[in-house]
Length: 193
Picture 1 (tube, rainbow, N blue to C red):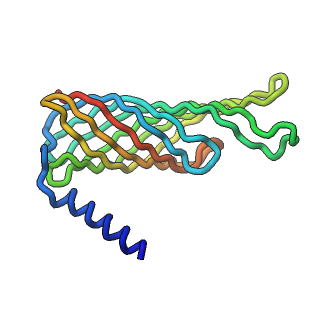
Picture 2 (picture 1 turned 30 degrees about the vertical axis):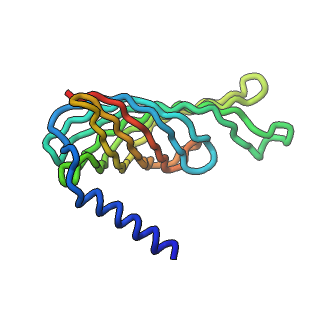
Picture 3 (picture 1 turned 90 degrees about the horizontal axis):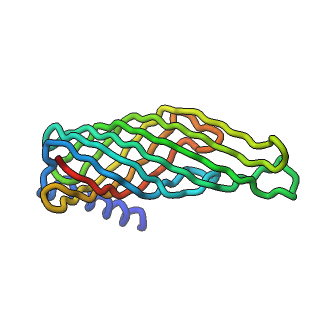
């Protein structure tokens, strides 16, 4: 019963987006925004935390555009290690993550709702602090990523907008710090020109 009701609500929401008249059509032109939100790594090795960055988009016409964004995520977390004696429960971990995406964006019916997909590059640096002299470890690497997302743009006057967005990003291989996917929910504050 619950599944049927959730499917009905999802179908209704999709129908509203695809078949409702567009309030403000996506206009050809450029936009620039800053964003902030929350990043949710898959798994339990790294805590969720703040992500922020900048984005640039260019709408070719009312239905299609290109969209690029670069974001930064830093978290200080604690990593359990069963190989170390019980006296040390958690080891401090610092993770810096840069994510850059280049996407194609589609506006169904030329409206404010956008669906995007694309490729990106993710650069990660992890520092693990182990008690003792010269025991600290660092690892850094870069990966190709794939992403899908959706956003909705509210125009505020002629030149400004607010755009909530959700993105899921898959890494071409899991590394020692992150699992194979991360999800982010952010809010853009931008300018159209």
